[in-house]
Length: 68
Figure (cartoon, rainbow, N blue to C red):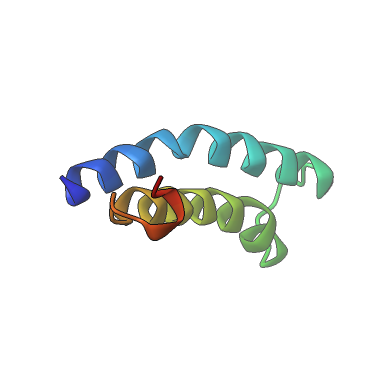
């Protein structure tokens, strides 16, 4: 179940990642030519959201923080 949930959360995290990447591209001035600074403003938010979604999905359901 952990792998399936991690893939699902990672896939769902692509939507906010794409929006953050678009926002970063607009904030960087919407340049026509590709430069190294666009790696930080376009790729980092996208893959960061995907990685966060995978990490959240991979966590064990029996977390001690959620015990009642």
